[in-house]
Image (tube, rainbow, N blue to C red):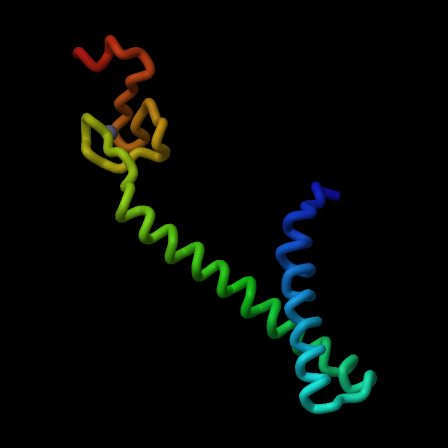
Length: 107
Ligand SMILES: [Zn+2]
């Protein structure tokens, strides 16, 4: 088996589970549900809340990434002008320019 990630478990199970518990407590009190009715309601409600939570956060992360790419764009290659793979890249995978050795840049 691979590594288990506690943060992934918290993100996918614990946070939506707590939200589900709060929602069930409210709905159960509001509509005076029996414990069996609350139990039956938990499963579809949990999967709905989990799906909205996970895809909603993924959408927020995507939107954040789009804004971040505009605010702080990737550095460009000094030779061909294409985007570099990382902010600390010392070579360009598009044109092959390499500036690990600063003396090369003088050529
Ligand atoms: Zn380049």
